[in-house]
Image (tube, rainbow, N blue to C red; front, side, top):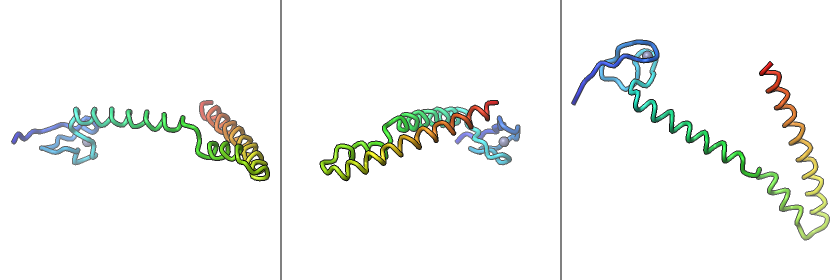
Length: 103
Ligand SMILES: [Zn+2]
C-alpha cells in the first residue's frame, strides 16, 4: 500500500493519503478528476440531445388532432394553437432575457 502526499491543485493544501482535499474538499486524484469531468460532458451531451426530442405536450396535442371525434379534434386544435402561441411568447422572452444578459 503506497502512501503519498498530494498537494491540492485548488488551494495548495498538502494532504496525506487523501482522496479529497481536507481544506477545500477538491478531488486530489487528477486522473480521476479528468475522468469525472469527461463523464459530466458526456452526460450533458445526452441531456442536450434528449431536449431536442419532440416535446411530450406537443406530441399529445398532435395525436389529438387526428382524433375521430370532431368535437375533441376541435378542442385539440384550439389547445394546439394556444400551445404554439405560448411557445413563441416564451421563446421570445428567453431570447430577450439572453440578449439583455449578454448586454
Ligand atoms: Zn484544497
